[in-house]
Length: 422
Image (tube, rainbow, N blue to C red):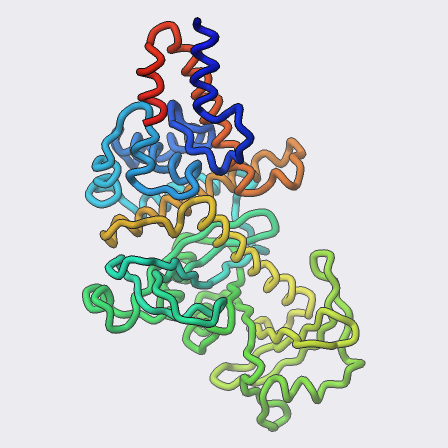
């Protein structure tokens, strides 16, 4: 009877069906290893009940493809009312800045997660499309990837990135004329980026260079970064005005005057480029080093134009620094697909901000597990956020099976099913 009972319950959990782990909405009997391992580090800043809610919410973000407060609450075998999780995000008094600092302390205490001087800080922004017209901070914003306007929330972010890891901070952008901008003050994306630069420097991030796309390249941001003694690398628009030997022209026009034989081959992270560089005066900037970069020896197609305040760097070093920036796209994709970055439906600015903060914290903890496990020579395919998330789901499955075996002699089948499948 006991064996049949266990098989019946396990069968209802879907373990004998051919399904993807990503689609399984597992009950939470105990927390996955990544949560149990790291959350205790934050107990000095949170009360007992706040730590419990933190564990519950992080578990939901990591193991549920579309986490919402109600979905997370419904998955807890140990009953929790959704209002308790809601209050944790919107009403509980806990220090968001302190939690962020504590998270960075945790990462810096791990050899594989420490920031390094040869890393970079990537500044960018991302949109979180929203259907509700009253979502906090949402408005009609232009999406450069789809080249159309969308109704979305916008985050300006800074990512610390090196060849092995990345973690990030953010500010929410409020559109000019919105009720949030009227209440909290309007700031441009460049001004928010400057705030993030100040925060990185206050926290002592070791990276010596900032990288960003053409939309952030401005005299204000460039000068602000250099005032901290740091360098920057950015893309240049092909029509940006430059001055070469007294002649005024667009970057593309200037590049056509460069002899083709002047381009030289450089290899960056196993990929070959053909590049030419020269120090030029760029309109609205001081003198910068400009790099023209092609991906083929025949110099066909549209090249990338880069600019940097590092006037004495060679082509390879400039391209390498900027190439690290593309890791930011993977970070956004992971945060949106695996950690519910765009799934928050709270109408509270405070609650929404905390949802994002905890999502990014979950991302960092998963990254920490990946970096720390490298001495065990894991397969490259297992060194991803998605793989770590699937491992957390497997932890839930194992915990549930063990709980069923333990409770089978003590609890009726109907009661167990009610607790697990509600």
